[in-house]
View 1: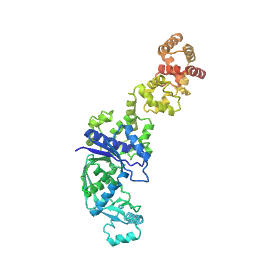
View 2: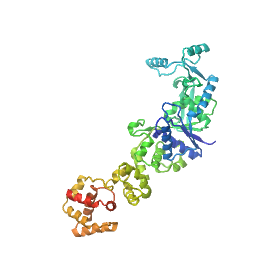
View 3: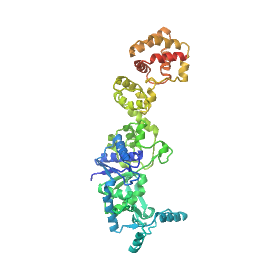
Length: 481
Ligand code: GLU
């Protein structure tokens, strides 16, 4: 048997982190098993589906490094298949036309609630006679198609993550709507609904394993009944844990976590994101190993090691993983990644004319980056943006003799400063003024960078010097004293 799995997003929004994580698990499973990973776009909801979301979903998956073997397959192009399945269900007597209006459904619900019962459809149209149907039609009522659900049924499956799951037919809300009312004359049925379309597609696409979020468990129970009704083999199911906020709630926009796009904008690398998402609910056999590529994870991925408990979204961990990847990127590649973030900060970046300098800058700030977005603040002084002196930098500059030190350095700077010369200047001033090297370094840092912390001082100085800003900045520092 060839393993065939799918990710089936609805294009009603940008690629969400939850969907992306489900896609990662499906991809890992397919690759581990030597199977196929299929992309299906569930776009039957015409009002909410948009082509730009389909675009965003595909580019987000690709950005993460997930490739699919078949698709995208669009549900809107498969309406005939759903209509055929609905007809089969009607022919077998497993589905029926239901005329209950939305007002009547509302009244039904209100009564149930007043009796403290869970709202459900009371199956009132299940056994309508031909005359009753004709009377409803004559009234101008439109029929939805409902699939019969046997309240006495117990639906049991062996979930690959959760073990045995048992659902009672009576907990499924009564006979379920599988197709809306037809809107135009030519339509056999109206819009097919999620559970029907999914089952028809999963059968046609010979899906062997359905791996999706735990929020679909009740749907799985309904879908198993549909597989049976359509005479198809039921696939394996694996329900992955929800992604939770730090407080243990279901992750929402309030937690600052939304679409994969947003993570990209926040300066996360795709490799780090994919790595982190793999760990959101899966524990590798060697649980101490936390940094791996998708391909490495695929070698070891088994659904049995997916946790049942919700996976907490941990920003610190994501940041740590991101920094691990960032710090490994060589400067010549890092510079390419940083350019958009520098440009966004309105710095003058001429990658063709000034590549060597920008590469040195990337090498300088690289080790202090956690996210790509840090590039702006880590390098703003080097792009000649104005210095803001911290209190301790000012205090440093006010120390006795520091003014003279800065003055001496200023006078000693030649036209072409290089590393050897920069170090020599510091040595010369140190000897001439008879002060400790630490005092010079600290004072120079305060004068150049406005702060006592930051990246390598000599390298920063050289980069500033190449831009020709050092003197004015040193002069300004002198004036502060
Ligand atoms: N369109 C559904 C969703 O985005 C698919 C669920 C499934 O995998 O069956 O949640």
